[in-house]
Length: 136
Image 1 (cartoon, rainbow, N blue to C red):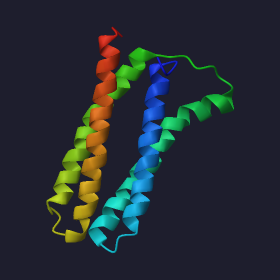
Image 2 (cartoon, rainbow, N blue to C red):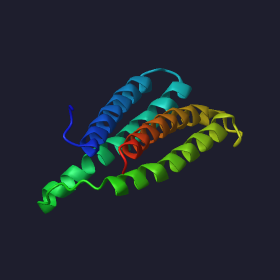
Image 3 (tube, one colour):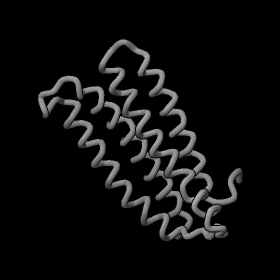
Image 4 (tube, helix red, strand yellow):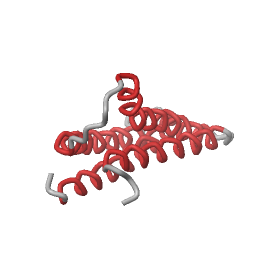
């Protein structure tokens, strides 16, 4: 096992995704295309949030000088709740993407949200199933 706990594995993978999203988003910003700029903006914002979620608990424990205590039941419940939120993000992104608000410049934002939300839905589902199959 590469990681000492599943929480560490989740944090590491989420941090990698967040950093890659920000890097990709910065790259998209350099396109001279408002559609790509909008996707890039979404990637930067979502990547920043994902990275903060990944490192936040570790920083909190470091500041409070608390030792890490793994609570897989709580983590499983959080992941399951997040799956529903992630599906909601994809639905909202789709509504924006198809032009429900009749503002064409938001299509790129909609696609960016769809991509980020879909990744998180798969990510959270994978880890929820991984925890459930271990019997927690």
